[in-house]
Amino acid sequence: MPLVYILLGYWLPALLVTGTNQALELRLLTLDRRWVGTGNGTTISERTPRPVIELLELAYLFCYPIVPIGLGCLYVAGLRAESDRFWTAVLLAVFGCYGVLPWLPTRPPRAIEGAPVRSAGLVRRVNLRVLGLASIQLNTFPSGHVAASLATALAVCACLPFVGLPLGLLAVGIAIASVVGRYHYAADALGGAALALLGFVVSRAV
Image (cartoon, rainbow, N blue to C red):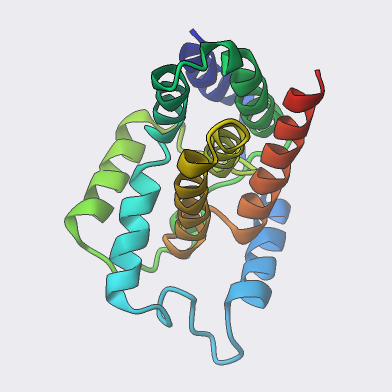
């Protein structure tokens, strides 16, 4: 059921959005140019080798199954009792992202910039296809994908470090891919990581 709660928590707030915050979009784009751009106007995507971009696109595709994968690892290891802590970390992180959507609605950077990323490969097309079918076509600030994936990795790592560490590397790849692929702004990724850490800390304290 928590997987259903995540989907509902993502879709329902979008019903309250009547327009996007263009001032916030401009501020987020400005931060992107400062953090991941260069003085001559090239983007991080243009400076990243093509094979790396393709690998990051593959990592981003795992932002959807990483949560059930993490939970499944706990069950396989006989740690079903940890599921409450797991869901506390993940749900706090993602709801912190989705809950503010009506007040901080923005378009994803790829919808504003219009410039294609240096990847027209199969995985990129799959990512865009999934977003076209299931996305609310709005940007979540902070990033729900980064928050969910990193919270999952932290929750699993607390019990199964040998599994949590690879999941953590995947979560970092998802965060980087979200910016390089222009699915999210850099500030989205940082905010999502902060909420993931907060959700994890709360889950271990209660």
